[in-house]
Length: 206
Image (cartoon, rainbow, N blue to C red; front, top):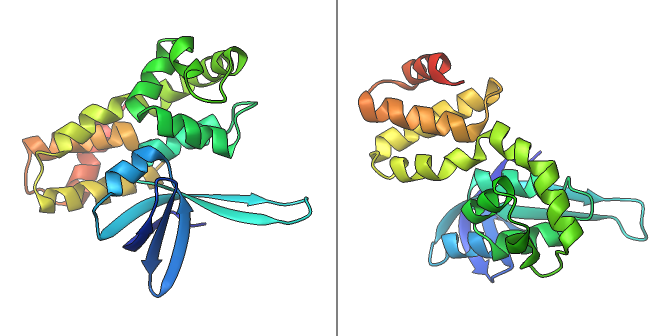
């Protein structure tokens, strides 16, 4: 299973990014949100969702790339909804930012979801009903504020933050709420090692 691909961005269109890592060029389908996030960058890190389709005339293996883990989480939630396939999910994430999508789902905004090409009333309602509780439980809605706070961290603190969030994720905690807690700890206690951050976070994450 591929978690992410990190390397040189060798080709980019609004729908596709090619990332070269260790001599291999990986073609990843992307949303417009990710396209905007990685434009003008030489080196990128894209979180990966792998899609394997079998049973038809031709089997296919497709990689989807996301600039943020939060966007990948939303994509994976969207494709669990009946009537929302891979391309429709990517269309939604190209039409709405993660913040706008979370707001539409949590607020029951059918009109905003219907504004996406290919989304009708029934599908919009299904997305809201199926995902409202899930985005809350995953803490995806809390992610934007955590990302804004992270902007105040130093490069060394960002490294500690990434390692701590990774460790917490391996322990079963969702990345978004973990990132928020870890960021606050690092702002209050700059310079502490990653293992101490994890110990403190375990006492605070709800």
